[in-house]
Length: 294
Image (cartoon, rainbow, N blue to C red; front, side, top):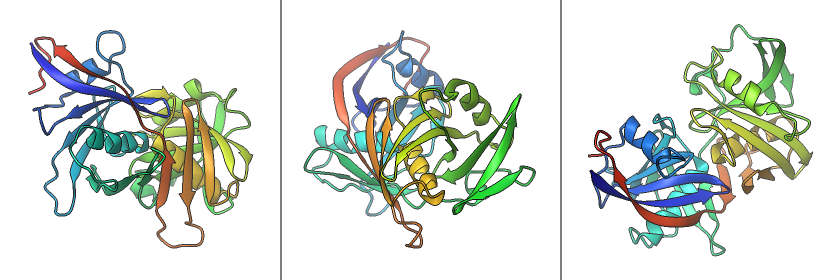
């Protein structure tokens, strides 16, 4: 049996096990990830984050993201903020603006004086192939600057818009997040045939031009207390659909996230996500025989 050093962190209630893959050797195989993320037999987390060296020029680190089911995913906004705080607290860097390699992009988290972290999440993509999304056979209607698509899920139709934030998202407008059918519609739309790589599903309630409420069913993780890319996706789609101004705060069950996007007036405008990132505790876990990590 071997020991692994870890840090437990959260961003607005979206919780992570963070591993330093620079000063210890980690093989993030699915069984190992599932063991760490297990809330009864392991540490417990929505996702596991692995910090590694980057081999790209002018990039400080590589950062990998694994869902609690063991699958590796492309992007995580709340995780990016926790990553930035982790590498500073762990003494891996003293920079406040950090260039980070993810599976599909280079992002730049910036640690603010108030402790919150702003992340340039990149330019949202809306072409079906960017998600990917097979839309040709679906009913469609326009709302503002966004096309809405209709999925027939058993006994009722669900209208949604789509966006890629480096990972695929569908956004549904609801009257109330409290009564939204998150656990019913979420998994059905996640596995809907039009999304060959599955999809994250956001349930968005509009409160005002600058405020909304959000619940997200995350692909491979289920409902989480907050989802950074889900918040970005909901804000972008809310702006495109005419609900929000270019900066909006979204209230998730674990805390508030602020998103800024100028995409309606500035071509190729990136999305900026600002929110908290906090350490809960540090620890060492003994990995049972049969669950390898190196």
